[in-house]
Amino acid sequence: MSKPTIAVALIVKNEAKHLQACLETVHDWVDEIVILDSGSSDGTERVARTFTDKFFVNQDWPGFGPQRRLAQSYVESDYLLWLDADERVTPELKSSILAAVGQNNLDTIYQMSRLSWVFGRYIRHCGWYPDRVLRLYPTKLTQYNDALVHEKVEVSSNMKVKNLSGDLIHFTYNDIHHYLVKSAGYAKAWAEQREKKGKKSSISQGILHALGCFIKMYVVKAGFLDGKQGFLLSLLSAHSTFVKYADLWVRSETEEMPSKD
Image 1 (cartoon, rainbow, N blue to C red):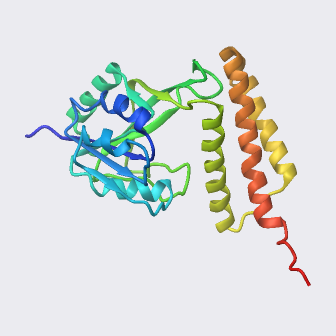
Image 2 (image 1 turned 120 degrees about the vertical axis):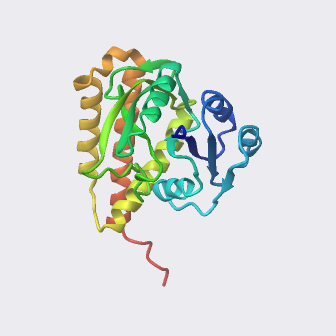
Image 3 (image 1 turned 180 degrees about the vertical axis):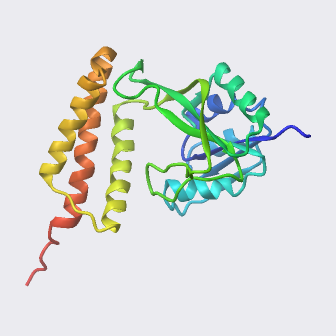
């Protein structure tokens, strides 16, 4: 029986800064690299093509879930490993992935622990670690759902989920500006998705959820053990939580500007 093949897939936009370091952790042991770009204006394509010819572009952004589904349609290998450009596969995780693929359990999805580097420190609390994410599965077994944001791998009752050993290192944010831009994009997509379902919100909901977010991350999940970075991350996450509820409230409750007589 032939050895199962492995593909790495990424959806990217303006990731020239991170992409090479990411792909250097996988290019010499996977069989295929598939990259779907959503309209980069930096050197992302140049970097990508030094590792693969399977570079595709879809500038008509459909949301994270649909974009991942499109990327998967280009994959030919037996197994699919999903990465983001700001992630790195550690040697221990590599060994665990290869062992799992070697077993070739066609009904099994694998999840891995993600360790994030945020503002100069690894975050091991705040509810951020081990942050297990489903990233490896037989290509024909499943795919991501079609959620616009916070997309997830579809798991049915006949599938098994197993943990892999080793960490996926995640270089989450370059700086505060990067965090704010990224979180604003997620908030917008979240509000749009909820609005389409007829959901509404209020300022008081935003305040309560933001307070709950901070208390959970900093106190319950021991974010204080991550020092100043833990405090900052908890505060910023509370702010992001408030913004997404406020965005939905603005969409559903405020009136349009009246026309002039």
